[in-house]
Every structure is written in structure tokens, then in C-alpha cells.
Length: 467
Picture 1 (cartoon, rainbow, N blue to C red):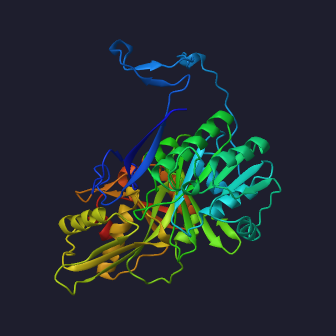
Picture 2 (cartoon, helix red, strand yellow):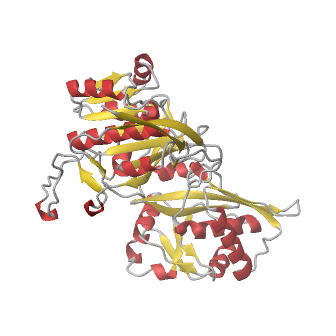
Picture 3 (tube, rainbow, N blue to C red):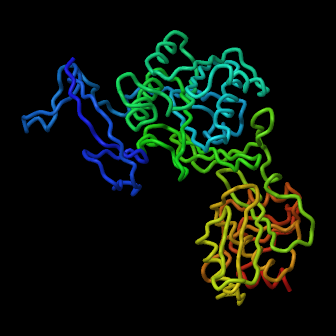
């Protein structure tokens, strides 16, 4: 078969292709990321398309074979297949109800965060399914050693230590697994390319082969992917568009808790969250995350407030810690962990302009406990209260929580799904909850065991709490 060899330059960060080397990538603006790679262009086969010199053909012509014909959408055959339900309820929730047959799931995370442990744990928990665990990073003995610590045990889990995709698919054809796990996509190599493992071309080609296999056979494929120093998936950006679901496994390696977050999901919501605890026997599911997000503390500490947030369909109560102290240096510091720094500056401006709190000469530090990053605007009121509490050095009752958004005019705005937030706070034993007065419609206060206090402005809230 005639082959035409050419070279091209690829950005190792985003996969941008260029005919010549460039110092700065025009797509992602990273420096010194272009690497030269050889490409082999095979002669067109029967059924392929090639460029035509005839302008009437529209630019392309078919070499010979029939291709798929257009079909009315009402005539497309559709059979709803049941999802594969795992014993991991956190994963089921994040995926939207279980693993979809024929889907490709990419899981990314920092080194040592627990990606391989999570995948092996899932593989061993599928007792009624035949699972093929393909590892290009560890030996069979290392995988067995990790499996000994995991309480789940499945005799239908097979381990294959191979990186060549042609050999992997040869084994797949013999055993026909129900689920396939790849650890990791950056270690695989395709025999059709000469580039090294982990290069842009290899990652893209190996992922494309696995996706074709998943769609043709209906076998779900779970792939582990490395991430860059910025926290995004390594390899070409197109890889995230090719797969069906992208999950981010996050957490501080110095802390025991891990968060599984959805970045993309074609078969479910992208706002769901799963929480795990890393213990000696693997990853333990945390069924009630509010208990771990609320730290153990004594009453009488100022600068601490409890806010209710929604992560998908799950209400969470999180603890906000604030420290407001006079600035020693000329420029006051503004630092936030788990909360948007720009939104913190906005709330500080609202407090100063609308409520009269002089914070422009104070250092301000915000921390959300448990390593969680919150984007729900309903946490605004709790952040504002914790700032005032620290500034005035007045503690807030530990049985009081907050759920409302704060506007630029100092008004307390309504948030969605307030009934779920109230129910979660009531379940955890809170006695008071401050919400927006515009959120009271449809709430039957007579049926509530806790006291719900509606407020209209930040100044009104401060008057009720601190005077």
C-alpha cells in the first residue's frame, strides 16, 4: 500500500497542529510546547473519500464502496438499554444513574489522588459483569497487591498489562468483556503510528480506536487520563469532545477526602458531585457529606458561618471561615480558598458601601472547610455574615445557617430549591435559617421544626444578628 510521509508540529498542551514550529501556540498561548511528529498518509481504500479535481463534485469523491445513507430520524432503530448499576452510589449519581452501555468515560486527576484505586474498586464491585482491566503503568502483582486492600471481590475481573492496542483488541475479541478499564490512555500506543506513547497523535488515535470499539460493540470503556499542571486533561483538547463523559477526581493529597465532579456528561447532569474518603481499605463513599464539611468546633468562635449550597440534586451544608484583621502592610491582602476571589471583592464592596463596614484597611481571608470549591451564589449570605462576625468579633450560634444571594444594592435575593435546603438543615439539627423574604412563597412554616427568618437587606440581617 502506497504511503506518503509528512511531518507536522503539534502543541503538546492543546493538540493544535501547525506546518512549522512556533514558539507560542496560537490556540492556548503556551510557550515551547510544539513537537515535530511524523505522519503517514495511507493511499485511499475502497469506501474512503479523497480530494477531487472536478469542481462539480463538491471537492470530494467516493473511491468505490457504498456509504451510510441518510435516514429519517423517526425510522432510526432505537432500543433503550438498561444502565449498569455499580455498588458505588456516588459514581452512579455522578454518571446520572449508572454506566451507559457503549459509553466512553474519561477520569482525570492529579498523580496519587486515587484514580487507579477508584477504577479497580469499581471493576471489583461488578460481580455479575466480566471486566477487563488494562494497565500500562503497573504490573499484575502491583494491581493484585492493591486489590487485596479493597473489600470488594469479583472473580470475573481480568488484568492485562499491555500497551499495544492491536494486542489489547486481540485479547478483547477472545474474551468479549462487558466492561473495559484503561489505565491510562497516555500509556497506550497504536501500531499504525510511529510516535512515542503520550504524544498528541498517539493519544488521539488510541482514544479513537477505543471509542469505535465501544460504539460498535456496546461495551462501556472507562479511561484514566493524566492532567497538566493547570489541572486540565493532558493531550489534545479534542479528546474531551470525543468522549461521552469527563469526570474530575479532585482533592488535597494531605487530606483524606476526595471529590468526583462532572465536567461533561452526554447522559446526565453536569452539576452532580460525589464525595469519598481515602482510608486504608480504599475509597469509602460518604453518604452524608454535610457532616464532614462541618468541622468540629466549640461555640464562641467568631468569623464562622454555615451556608447551604446545591451540588446538582444534592443539598450540602458547608462551613465558611473568615478572618478580618487590620492590615500591617500598605496594601490589604485578599485571599480566598474554595470561593471566587472576584466575588469576595464584590461582597466586601457591598459591605462597605451599603452597610458602612470599613474593610478597606483590613486583611481579609476566606476558607471553605473540607477542600470543597463552591460556585452556588446561595453561599453569599453566609460569607457576608462570617465577614461581619470576624470584623465585629461576635460569634454566631452554631445552630444557625444561611441561604441567599447578595446583590450589588445590598439586597438579599432569592435562590432556587429553597425547600431542599431547609429540609437538609432541619435534618442536621439546625434551629434557625435566614433566607430572602422573596423566597417565602409556597413555604408552609407551620410544618417546619426549625425557625425560618426572612430578610430583605444585608443591613437588616446585621441588625438582627449583631445588635
